[in-house]
Length: 207
Image 1 (cartoon, rainbow, N blue to C red):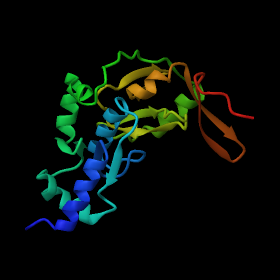
Image 2 (image 1 turned 180 degrees about the vertical axis):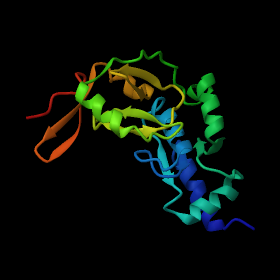
Image 3 (image 1 turned 120 degrees about the vertical axis):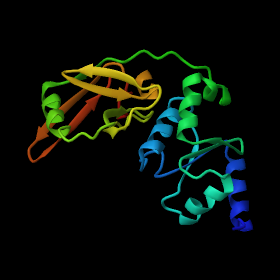
């Protein structure tokens, strides 16, 4: 089937107007599949800015991109208008340092941060992680705005492991750089309860 000219023009503009574009399931903040999550984790550890396109929310892109790129699966990474590849290729390139070279970034050594899980948090995690699926791990992401994200996900290239109170936490390289000294607690306040994360590297709130 011939590719619709209007769709091709739309994709040509998208991948050439943006240096890095990731066609994925979900978005950078909330990937909707393990492969997309892995590539997002890799990119987050190397570059600060890139565009993502959620193929799940746009059926035309989801079907048309397979023909446009001649690549059958997602995610698909484009850099400077050229298809780089999918999850396996991106993971391999990141491991060899080739992906860093593609972005003109020197591979920086990052030490595993120290993370403290309090007794209350450890007890809650033990209950919450009873049904942990194979290949999933507890992940802590620390964006630059310090809006912490504690969730489950697959291990990605470059992840650093932190162990405390019987639990292992994975952090991507970008999070690890600002994550040393993080404390994960579990607090109860009346009817409300939840994990509380503090970090000595977080800027003081503006008053």
